[in-house]
Image (tube, rainbow, N blue to C red; front, top):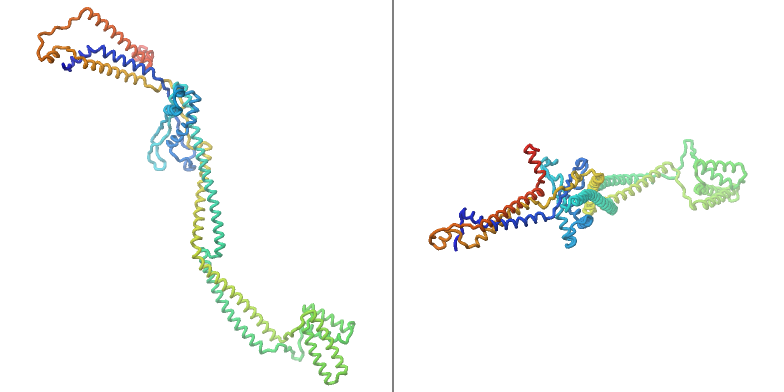
Length: 581
């Protein structure tokens, strides 16, 4: 087998020999590329630009409850907008993807719709207000849709943009309202919990009966104070007992009924004594005088006046004394004069009258009157003794009360360590809950202000700065790039097909190939002499190639006109460049 030529001349010879195959193969491939380029359906992209504006009120004054980053919210809203229901509604509304709807499934239809939606964020270097360091922040994003026609692409992009803007407002309001509602529930629960704790603490204090840990110092002070009072009362009781003993000793040396006699030998009578004497005289006189007697009337008036003055009603004590004196007088007179003497008879009547009066008074008052002492010194000491006894009784009562209070405070102090842990747990829980409640209330007020900020559209928002445009040319496919790629592939395919045909052809084309094959030089080389038929065939081939070249040139012009720049525009541009326009 002869080796194929590898030099430049030999390669050029190969190209000349295989030019027909190379051009035919390349033409077929380029034709197929053109068919693919022009038969691919166009995709028109309508793009909207949405700006992320900061909230109007400074964040230092009103803090928003929406704390997520802009790109995170964009992704969240993207998934909400591109939900199954929204996409199916848009597809049915505008009649998108009719071929897929006829042949494919709903999932394929949704995947096609999702593939045609483009969202790209726009970032910029900004300075963080807190750290004053430059950071990369999202300031805007673009929303695009690839449609089969420019109006359709614009309409779908408009719908998607409206959904994005509405969903952003809805999300921010919902987030602010949910935050406020959550804080309200937390505040209500904490208030209820604090109220229950307050009731528990109140019940605990009632059961503790003053033995609370916070009252230890007070209980100790009160206990010390009661101890001092008890010591003082004990001293006063001892002093009163000594005074009582002294008064009792004095009272025993004095007669209770010794009357008071003046220097002239007369007994002094006060109103009470005078009342007693008049009552005795009235009892004596009433025995032998009639009620209408002037002396009787006078004594009655005097008794009434003295009773009003002294406020003392009649009693049997006075009458008993008078009865004793009269009985003694009657006994003396009877012994001296006998029983029939007028004075004895008169004394008997007086005694009988006094007995009747005593019986009458006894029925009205006490049955057995006692004789009161008349000695002023005795009465004075007796009053002092009664006062001492009363004081001593009061001091002993006070001493018992102080002892009870001492025992009460001691019991409280003993009980405090046992109840202290539970009480501290309750108060600590109450204090922590109260502190947390105040924090929740403060956050609730901030959340309510933030909710008003979102409702009034004063927070961070999406602003449409560039609405979806009506595309003038298709975004896909990139026909010039595809055409160039097809041209490259066509040339490569034609050259490759020619090279393959050359490698498969074992014909001997030169004297060198023959010499290498037979290992001997040829005797002579006769050049190819073309005939008239060969010349005619070569002319026909040239005309064919010329027509093919003209067709290719015309095809290139048409492609340039359609894919790159209209020829009339290009012509006028060239004339303007040359100064001929």
